[in-house]
Figure 1 (cartoon, rainbow, N blue to C red):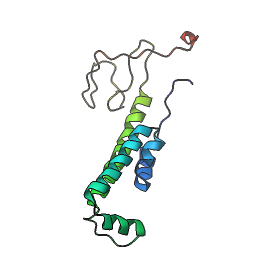
Figure 2 (figure 1 turned 45 degrees about the vertical axis):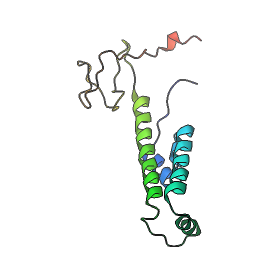
Figure 3 (figure 1 turned 135 degrees about the vertical axis):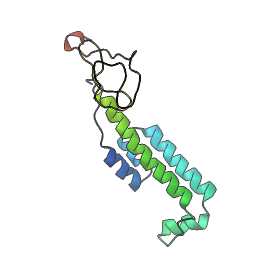
Length: 142
């Protein structure tokens, strides 16, 4: 393994999460998070949604949207979370270091940094103590 992080498509993670709760997180290889969202969806459906509404939903019958609102709410939060996790994953994948060990992209928002200042001028994250070990092919004799 070369240590690089593959980039993910946030829109694809969101679409997969719309299709099935947790599927977008599985695409992102966040299996515990996917299981957490699935457990949250099942818990909310059993605690706050009438059994008749769930049966009608599974059977494909017409269901009052207000009756299944908790399930829709948790599903929507899962979609938003999958999108944001994919964006955060990509921001981490973009972080690179110069030969002197300074980062070129903000670890918080992922945008390119101005090398002359010690904070991100996009999101104001303090970078004064942040340094990443530069990757040097000559030093990788494991």
